Length: 415
Image 1: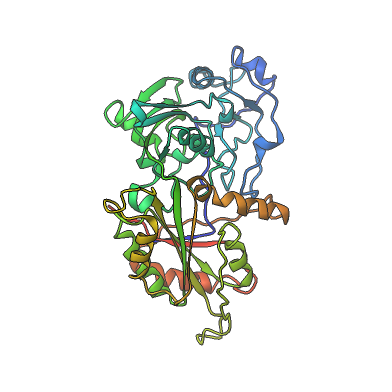
Image 2: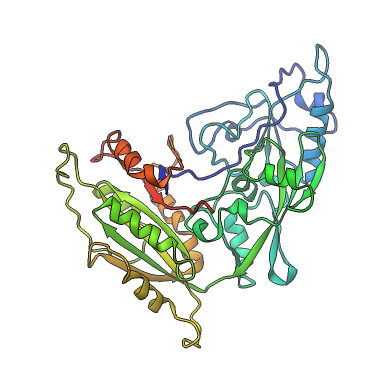
């Protein structure tokens, strides 16, 4: 069982080489043919808004070769007085790291959004070659033009391909397809010595598997080949409410045991009226659920509710005898669940809108001035046998009546 408290939107986390630089000259003078720019405020800022470390310079590479020149120059430079300094280097994509991981104090930030962001569908639709600086929403938009899409996602799509592949990339499809780092066929990587390497499970596999989820410690991803599947035109999106953690998690485990029927499984805790309203912003169906947040009868604490969220791809086939449509699958699956009846709500939405659902929540938070604020996110993996104890620990820590952040809880399979 994975318990996610204050969900982490994975971001670029890259730190190469060793010591920070101590520049006496302009960075552009020091590194000669490597084009560096003066630092920008964004280079010392990230989504977490907890840490701010200014670099001495910023690089906006036009190609992998530009990144290679920088890292090659740094790795080959002898250290010592009067010599070219070594420097810490961090790759920054969309800037959604949480604790300064994409910053480089006194070093150089490589802004990977400047890399080519072309998305090229190849292999007869089997895969897409994608620039690491592309946002996942851009990948989705381009692939949908061919009726295709990647299999595994993050909840928030405005993150770079290189960023999530350097972390993990986990969402509600991971129980079925694995995280994003398990859905990569090939990478182009610039190593810390400035070598541009194409790697895969069979070609330079040690580098390939080290870079995926490697937090940038083994190289900067500049391009990726992502497997594709046929994209459904519609999705049946369901939310079902619970008042028991054990029943809630038990039904989640039941759902992930049905990958032939279910395509997405997540869940969240409902701590108060505000958290219920916030979680409902993107869900386009009317939810007539009015929970009673009175005492839970245990130590005088307020009662907590839970919501399972699952989705079924609806290909709307005409040959319904050969394949069940989305409504039938939802009815079949819902009949196996033990939610608080009648509080299960279903709605049909476009596939793009479902995957892009967090964008609506972002816009709502921006309108309230709550997007560009500190985000002390916590993201943890908890074994199934410890999930209830961790939940109790968490509930003893937060003030339930005032807490507004999301608390996501959903299972991943370990094999």
